[in-house]
Image (tube, rainbow, N blue to C red; front, side, top):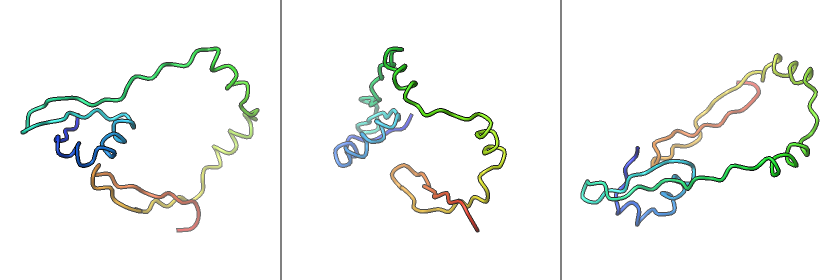
Length: 100
């Protein structure tokens, strides 16, 4: 579980809430002691009545063509760093198909 200070919450509230909205749980600390926890709200599962119309609206799939596409593979793939997000310590990457 990641920790953030009250000061970070106050100064960077929008970024903090974006992290929580993506599923991260954060412990808020004051003077190094945990005082609160921020976590995403639980989502309500969809009912069968909601899922069936979505499923029926999906395009038809040719299973044999899908297997051929998967077996053929994506071709050459290059992964290159595009930018670093320091607030999360994560290196974002760009994936491109084609020549190296």
